[in-house]
Image 1 (tube, helix red, strand yellow):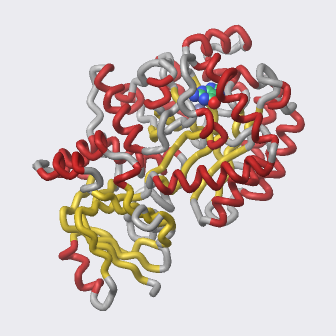
Image 2: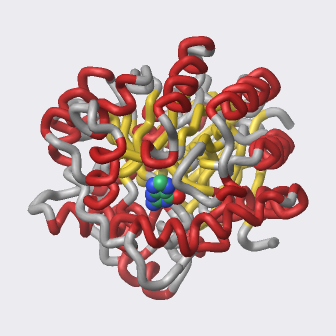
Image 3: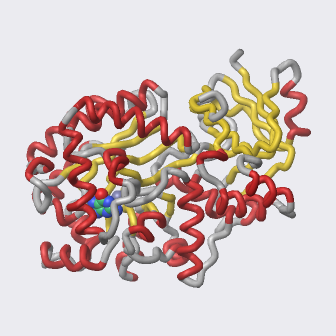
Amino acid sequence: MSKLCFRGALFHTLGNPVHNADAAAYYADGGLIVEHGKVLKAGAWDDLQSATIGLPITHLPDTLIVPGFIDAHVHYPQVDAIGGFGEHLLDWLKNYAFPAEMAFADMHHARKMAKFFLSELLRNGTTSALVFATVHPHSVDALFEEALARNMRLITGKVLMDRNAPDELLDSAQDGYVQSKALIEKWAGKGRLGYAVTPRFAPTSTREQLDAAGKLLAEFPDILMHTHLCENKKEIEWVSALFPEARDYLDVYARAGLVNDRSVFAHCVHLTAKERADLGTANSAIAFCPMSNMFLGSGCFDLAAAQEADIEVGFGSDVGAGTSLSSFGSMNEGYKTAQLKGQRLHPFQAFYMATLGGARALHIDHHVGNFTAGKEADFCLLDMAATPLLKRRLSVSKNAEETLFALSMLGDDRAIRRTYVAGQLAHDRDTE
Ligand code: GUN
Ligand code: ZN
């Protein structure tokens, strides 16, 4: 059967609800028809019904159909480092992140972790991600091989680090360039895969290495650039000591040609007004990582200011500094971060950032992110009665806004009943 049909409540966004309230679409009785792995039609059930005649219909009670979630910043080698007690960023890297990444010198470990990581993404309803690998080229091979086998739309890249990290995790400007180039030629555009040139952050690269990363971007205009920016105050002081010639942290990257409309910067908690304006001018994107920012005590991201500067913002789990692979975790802590800033993160906006906004940040929105006809059918069936508390709370909800908000506060992997990748069932909570 090339066509599949699902009936339930349905939510997706057609644009950024912060700019246009009509961009959010909710149908209490909705449906989705998938043909050959792509969206054929989605909307109110009444409007779809004639197209469903003769099709077997999957109609599960208490189901909300949403686009697959998109994690705009996550480190797959850090799964074993989640929940590292007691440190802020720089010591956390030394004590937790780097040791976990050193274990990836072993290709078998990398393969095992790639499988585990992608299974966990799907169990959390996440169908696409922009992922840090490690400095080892085979860490990229392992993740791409597994993502290709699962037909996932996934982007990763070899980490570039030629200083200020353990010797086992260092490459050189030249080796990093050559290895990245070989990986791009091998993987970029294969299946649904994409490549991101991935300098870890300014302190772990020399100018020479950042310049080499810029050269790669100039040679391969379709790939992304993925790094960290302005996460922690001590990190920022360190960057200004290491790069005295740069006007600010962002300028370190800009001097190497790393700031453009295909750049994704994780965190951006402590941007100056100038840096924020420059990101807006360059059309770069931000991965907002509230779970990580709270866990490491990094600070509160200014979402309203980023929106004001017209910067695309997606959610990043930033696991292992983030404490969950669930997009509900990002929505939950994102809301609380906004509260601390005196701002409001509306649930439509939060779901947008976890789906279409993330897709736009990663330049995959012409393929995924909502249910526009012709897009790849990556989606989840959410169980609105996954727990007694969720069921009870939603039973008294008065409207879509309240339902989505309560779901984002109470939801976790238990609410992901099924995940579909390009129309194929990729996770079924009730049979696994
Ligand atoms: N900055 C540089 N590397 C990292 C990392 O692995 N995690 C986080 N949260 N920040 C970083
Ligand atoms: Zn990170």
